[in-house]
Image (cartoon, rainbow, N blue to C red; front, top):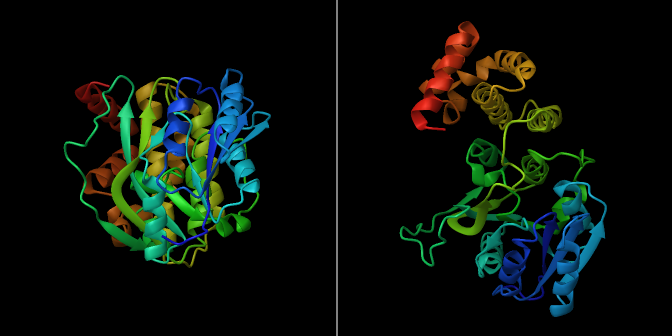
Length: 331
């Protein structure tokens, strides 16, 4: 372990009083001791502000920031601005981490001279028992990636999240001004601008971040215009920024198309926001050559390609197929 390298762990806090203590308890007991924990109260209307202050009185490594509500994106940036660590980590206040997560991430980064390190995510649903020991532990598989390889692998959800990574703080010095009101796809958007500065990223598939899926979480509930419009805006910002001559660009387009398809399927399943259907379909048609390119095969299976053809030439049949698949799966 490298000495004198502080890790700043930033926790946006909003309406999470049922889960906040669990989150912070698993941070103050980290095996990596040189940390600061920044609790950013994002104008939470419940007891969270008081709970944050109480935690700061218990542990002098905890700093509390109270701000007007601006969303998780702005809360994270406020935390970064007020941090003094060499590394930055993020945790959502309704989730929790294994007690050796930051030591493991730091050791990975140092051992592989990486600006970003990452680990796997374990998803635990509300009402589900949390196992003391995984019945099927994941074998350690460590991979190093450059930017092109990162974009090629972005269809794996663990690369989208901010919370299962550790970042060199200087990466945040070059972030552009981004829309801070985003509620959806903000993780992916910030990660893109951090990843593009990265020479080496190292990831392990061992899950040490526990994502808690519950009825009150930000992504729970039905499809809304905010979900669609935030996602489209985030991907459009990335597309506008991307160097079109980069070998990574086709993967970025493939990721954008994958998002378009996901949103179209969500519109069909929820029977909502139908006025967004055609613009999304037109965006897919605009970039259709990438769907059938050999380079993007990692993103699009034969089933995806058949589905796109059906969407373009027989949208009614495509819609029925999506609904039939939903009925077969029971959701």
